[in-house]
Image 1 (tube, rainbow, N blue to C red):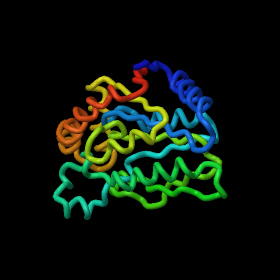
Image 2: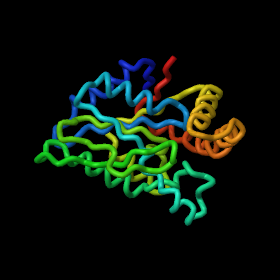
Image 3: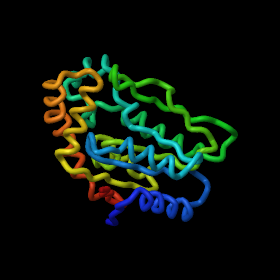
Length: 214
């Protein structure tokens, strides 16, 4: 596994894969990592660096709705692998790959409202002009629960490493920003988030590159 230590080295790896591929489908780049590792920030920076031909699709929009999580008895561990619509996520990746160079069709995907902790249908639109889609999410490299079928749809994958305490501090700050008390934010970061992080860290070996940024 190669190590990427700068944003430009990540972009260079994506550019190499794009140049080597045929043009019959979009290049799909995956950035995986534990909660709070900075995947969203990195994906946005990478898209900015690649320019107008790149777009970002966060996996968060495929959270199951709150009502469905309550029905399933999974609300108290929201963020675990089985609290996402993995089939819907895979179908969207397939549509994204097939949509490049077509007759103007747009691929719609859900966004995510962190304040309400609910998916927002149709918030993200991938136009035919986009040739590279950057997917960021926790379980892109997981090999169970249906997620194993999504890794094959990535042309290039990265795993983002971040020091544990920094990652936890970021999570606590984010949970507080979106309405949790200090105690509740810490409990969630060290409870469900940490359990998910341990699972996700085991997927790093499946990435093409490991990202270790200063």
